Length: 96
Image (cartoon, rainbow, N blue to C red; front, side):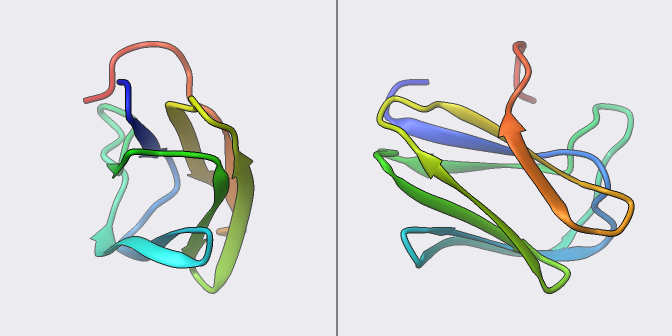
């Protein structure tokens, strides 16, 4: 979708507090984030007017960041078995 960045919060979330920052400014926060394994998602964070910058996701006292280039539209964050976030390109297909 033009003009926004979608960050899919995928697998591994279990009643977590999640915060998303863009260039150090908090743009989204929610508690109780839990993966719905029937669709493989916990939530979708939509950040309007996404531009270049550094996106950071914090969960379980751990964080992962990634440089966002202009025109980026979708990323996916999953938690590994230790609870650390992994961030990468979202797979093709619809976002629920």
